[in-house]
Amino acid sequence: MPRATQPSTVAAVPAITTNSPVSGTAGTVVTLTGTGFTGATAVTFGGAPSASFTVVSATVITTVAPAGAGTVQITVATPDGTSNGMGFTYTIATPVISSVVSSQGSVEGGNTVTLTGTGFTGATSVSFGTVAAAFIAVSATQATAVVPAAPVGTVNVTITTPGGTSAGIPYTYVAAPVLGSVAPAQGPLAGGNSITLSGTGFTGTTSVRFGANAATSFSVVSATQLTAVVPTGGPGPVAVTVTTPTGTSAQAIPYYYLAAPVISGVAAGSGPAGGGMAVTLTGVNFLQATAVRFGATAATPYTIFSATEIRTVSPPGAAGTAPVTVTTPGGTSNGAAYVYLGAPVVTGLVPNQGPLAGGNTLTLTGAGLTYATSVLFGAVPAGFTVVSDTQLTTTAPAGAAGAVTVRAVTPGGTSVGVSYTRIGTPGI
Figure 1 (tube, rainbow, N blue to C red):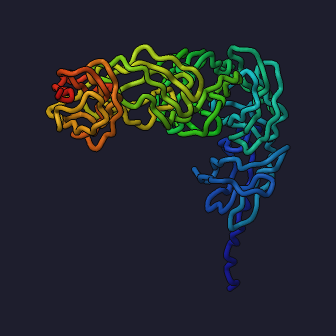
Figure 2 (cartoon, rainbow, N blue to C red; figure 1 turned 30 degrees about the horizontal axis):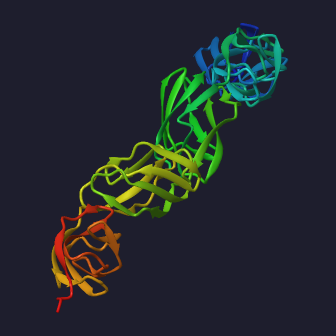
Figure 3 (tube, rainbow, N blue to C red; figure 1 turned 180 degrees about the vertical axis):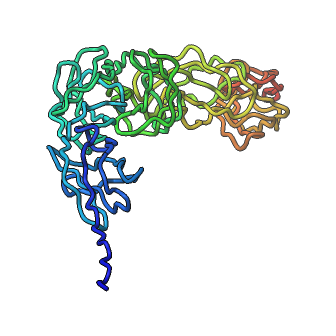
């Protein structure tokens, strides 16, 4: 009996009959129809493997187009073999800009902005309005561009690729800040004082500088006004500038750093407690003096004769030593001693009598005698020597017989007198 023959099984190689769509960009989902798709191990686009694919059935596969260009053949591979190829044409998407950072800048341009979006590959131009900008295409989703100059206003930024020109996204040109004035325009080397800056375009200020030094702090009051705390600096003028995202002010507005005044001499160095004594101060940096004080009391008027001399009149003050100071925008000087004097007091005279011819030495006691300027016998001045604040010696002048009042005189006034009697030689 003849042996029975077993039927042979022939593996079915996959076959693609259609693909939809037949064109698109990387990432496009493509549906393949055909036969023999069960157990598919790969889907390729011109040899490039698909980013992902799904076997829906033996006759349907969905797949995602990988990166590519031109027209390529899509194939499906299974353990039984590789299918025929079906054409897929890569198209170029129109670029899309989603943001521009930053979105504003100076009319002078020159700043760099970053564009983000999609489809930037192959970019051929970036434009601000109708003006082309220098640019660098960084990736398919990012590009940097150097902003060209333009008038104040808003323009649309666009990017062009072989896929077309994007829709515009706004960019605003703003005038750079203008600094008009600084008040006060001078101050001490140590800084720390607050000044007011006036001008335009101060919104968004990022820095205020005094020469090369940044302000210790600043506050934007409005688009036309700033306040700033002055940093330390050297003597002389520096340029104050204001910087915003739109640029730096170009006006050279000076601020002057001034050294503090120094007093080296006071003449006269003493006077009555009632004031009224003419006083000359010598030193340096007296120009622009705003006050002269004896202790806490202001002296008025005062006259600035030069950077090294001021003349004034002492105000009333309590007996004792008071510091004299000069204040300018550069600061307040050292305190130089000025002595307020009460009127001297004379309590005793030894001896209290002498010959008509005078010439004898007397000792005057009391208080406040240090600054004695004269000793009077009646109206006649006599020679004297100050021994201490409570004692001086004097030489009696000649005079008529009888009593005369002796007084001590200082810048603080004239003392109450004590009696001195001249006695004639007795007759024979």
